[in-house]
Figure (cartoon, rainbow, N blue to C red):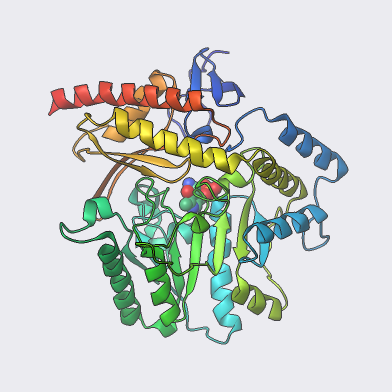
Length: 454
Ligand code: PMP
């Protein structure tokens, strides 16, 4: 197939390279070029890779048995089974679930549930949300206003609620002070949260929104030591809800099914406090890209309150779609049966180690970090460079046969140039080494050009 001269799609002014077939971690393009997938379809989605015949079979069988029921008219057992499974897998920390179709929808649902919780509790004045900068929580109007990526939101700004407040998202490597420990830095951010709460008045606040492991703002960032427990302590002090966005980092990508459970709260041998969200959103890996499914899960107090008021009124036509739910349950079954979370942890370690070793002498590499198969390579860029550095590396990787994700931007003075890797959970040892080889080669090529330009 040849690439058409003109694209009829809204997104692109020039025709995109087109993938025409796929298998495992490889895509074949219309040009005949083969691309190794370092980021699960481009956006950390298809965690079981391409061409999984079990998922295709499940999809077909469920579609034949019963393709659709509108959840307000007829329940279906697939959504019931998936909700039960997710709650069990959370160690029963989550008590109920609803299924939607995208990460944005799940985050919209999370915010709506949080607001409903307080209204049902007789506290309708609570209508302010605190989130972080930089952050991204989806592209629909509600949650676009909660995150703050200028390139995605500026044009729509007049439409957003003024009741959104931002505190700093942690990035110790860049913003920790010279003599400040990780814990002291986390405490400083928790103090900032507390003073923001005091300014707004806790009686006006719904809760705090955060990704447990940042992926969608300016690159992959696991939190610094004790950040989540310290933040959670402040939220508990003022009785505010904790809303976690695991759209990207969840569904096993961190090495645990739930990313919030992958973050150790232990410090210096001490057992730290457990942090459990009140509301949790999942998407991406949940359906492995075979179906468009996301989930919103609720902890004890939100579940109890919503049930007391007669159950959640939210309704989208395709909510709790039986085919989506059947496939997501199969994804979960395969992850468990094939012990893929162990592979995520082992291959993730290998990825970090090989990258750190082979980029030691590349001056434009600032930091490499991650958790499980979710890894960010932060570059020392320059905002005056056009195209920006991460975008250049991504382009060079593509020419060299590797698909990665690039995040470039400057948000409130924070510069970000990051390459994100998030291969499928079925990735092999050899494929990890190939991903590293292609990426390091591409970074080196771009670094040489960059040094010539500056
Ligand atoms: N939250 C996070 C953390 C995300 O990474 C994304 C997608 N990049 C979203 C929300 C929105 O998900 P979707 O694109 O499926 O609507």
